[in-house]
Length: 440
Image 1 (cartoon, rainbow, N blue to C red):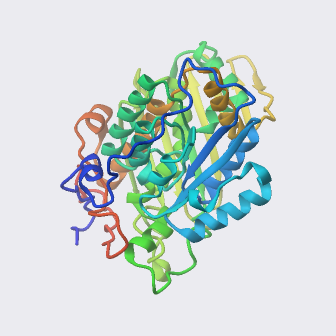
Image 2: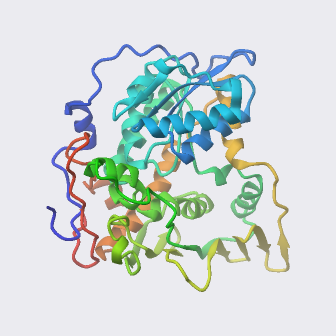
């Protein structure tokens, strides 16, 4: 057992694990990618899509991808669990009809399901498993010459982030597209708001806040653990509530708000300091709640000594719920929340008209277009930095220590990988305790 609050560092990095573990991929002769930057892909030719991770989010991403553009079809699926894959397949077949062309031989189950999907002749793969596996799957997808859509967050620890950045650079050199699931950046109204900020419409940024205050997500995860489930299966089925799988809710969900802040500054934060804890995820349901927190509060410092205050909760019966961000400049402010974006230029307040175009669909449309036209589109580093912004905030709150961007990017050795990837015993890391848990 780990010591209380210890985010234990595994002896081997995730990259070494991939090379040395029992499930590591042997040398596989992947089919060559059918598309690369500079090559045209005729509109009448179908783009073949595979998905790795068939949960609710992944299923929705696949349907949005198929709906975004003509001549796109799903031909391969992979998931850790057969029941989840078949549930997803049935839903997509019902909603997308003949765009779902996945024979039984292209359905892959288990920890190495991603290898099976990548060994088919897919052109584009959607990586939508629990976040922990993203660096492993991205590295393999790029090596196999596939274009990638990957959901956020893209890692759960600094070791994973470094892997994602390295894989993204390799994809750039290969001419492969990568799109991250921070779909707010594809929202046309958000883009207009950021154009105002970047053109100096509210002056130099000096501060602001972002909040996502909500309930405890009690509907997530299985209702109870089945006796036949091992520790590893239980944690993967209830993945949201385990830090090693989800990154905690600051990373898994609240990345959208913090990504907007990074976008506004065109830079990640320089430092952060925060606190958090677990006040309500206790009692008879404690086994379901894993080891994540239920509240966070972090002050981020951005270039120019601008201060952004973030608060996030997952607590039932709170008196108010808020999802918003607000940026303050030397000439005015820009507020986004409650379905509105309001510009205050120092003279008057103006509400920007909301776009009716779905950003969740548009992100796939833009990627398909880039693939067909042979255009460069690589968001890997960008979404990795936004993910790291959430991770450094979590690390500060877990430990009670200030964290700098330079340290977390270049010196942290934190790797939350389990000792091995197989169903069986797996100890649960204790809930972190600020002031006692070490900063690794």
